[in-house]
Image (cartoon, rainbow, N blue to C red; front, side, top):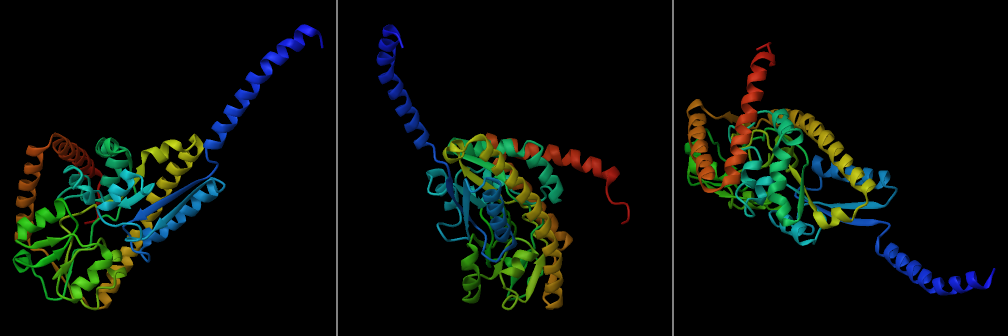
Length: 357
């Protein structure tokens, strides 16, 4: 090595060492594995929570253990509407609940879920949120709070109301205390029936029904209601759930946590979410068929809403939606977008719907 080259090497060596040290520090700051906490609203024995476990296992396997998501049943870290705040504040990386539970954050969240006379089939709601404008609208609400929104799964038509004493119609609900989700469902029920509505979380429902703090209970679909084990103390039901005909659950993801993931882990997470959506929706609906059969075999007295009650439901629902539209521009957009999509859907299926009835 000549003298000139040696001098250059001596001059450049300290700079090279500094560069390597900085590069090493940057690499150390990027974690090789990510540990996430996922708080669900679901009970531990529900099908959606069991599938959340499979979802987490799939993410772990596909990522080679680099992304580990631990799901928690309702009430473990937090519960109910606070799930949104927990994701927003970074107390947890993911949440799983129902859009109408976040209505305290913005009134338009109440409209994201299926209100009365909304999408009447879960496939229309799936189209709107997976391929239409629904997901974009939801993220307009969530992203200012640092939250990425994704649809989770579709229970579809909810079951109805379970009660100790027989309910034949809206008049029988007057002054009764009814467990129902917050937002649009409870507002319409309260206005139509003159009932008191309470958004009780699942782990509190049975004790409240047993001690008389509740007269009637709405809890998701036939499968969800059966798994909650209320049939032994609630021998009467009225169906269907007018307030939520095509209900959906959602995922909330802390944006800062999401942005830290490398591209391949983001792709794995998004793919696993879509797999969870399809698998849980289909499995849960099969479970609903089986659960409804069990309600019938258990000789639960099941009533239907009358034509007159349905008209009362519709009039009140229209009035409540008009109030939402008048108060908030984004709520008005959600209502208009849903109505427009429903019209296209209905027009198509007038020609290509079932022909055997």
